[in-house]
Amino acid sequence: MTRIRSSQFRRAVSISVGLAVLWVVVAFLRSGTTFHLAPILVAAALPVAVAYDTRDQTSTQDLVLATVVGLAIALVATLILTLADEMTGPSLLPSGGAVTEAVVFSLVGAIGGFVIATLRRNP
Image (cartoon, rainbow, N blue to C red; front, side, top):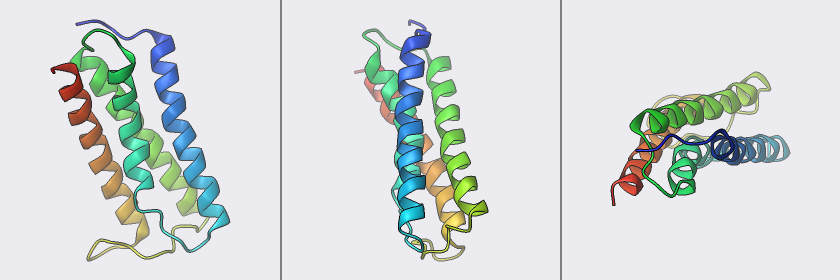
């Protein structure tokens, strides 16, 4: 198992942050619209990018770190949109609003990203 280099981690973080910024900007432009897949993509992007950016197997510790950071980025984007009152659209969940959906989907994305990254690590 190899540790990821800081440049690889920064590149993966920039992908996740870029998706989060895109989500926030588009949400401001399309007020009242819920972008259901955005939190999943933002949270999953970092661990998947870390796994696919390394030539060797990535350590579990690095994948967990990438998953937690990806989840945090998605939750910060959710917080920004919530404080700006932009999370007013419909939800796919049977109860709760768009904020609840974004938190749940962020968790789903983080777990899914970790699973994909782990499967990539152990072909």
